[in-house]
Amino acid sequence: MSRTTTTTVSITCPHWCRIEPQAHADDLWNQGGVLVHHMPEIRINDAGGFEQAGSDTLPAAEFSIGMTSLSTPGGRLQGSSVIYLDGHEVTVDQAEQIAAALLEVIALAKAP
Image (tube, rainbow, N blue to C red; front, side, top):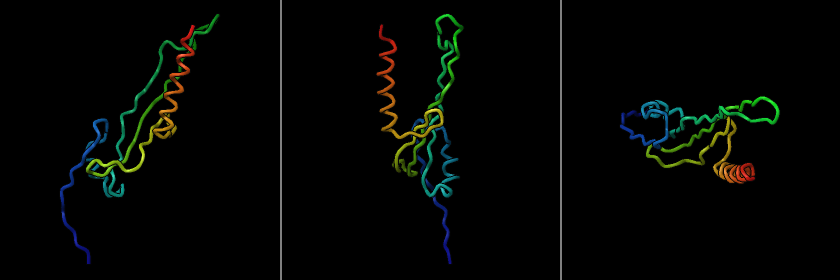
């Protein structure tokens, strides 16, 4: 014989999570008791495009950056966050390496 009770659960979301706390509560059972937090996607584009010597400017493709993380209802992180670079999953460590490499390449691109 099973027993059932009703209880109140406090949901703590990071400030960047775009999911409403009630939606987290509604999906808590389906997610195994953890919350899946979603950061609003950042879309990056450059309307100026690529300047080409002797030809028209080429458009630059837009890309996106996002992140998800898991936590308990009380806000304790569960596992690693996943960062999305244009739909590709990368770890936080990989993202840091990519950021450092980008800064290095940007410095070279801006050098006289």
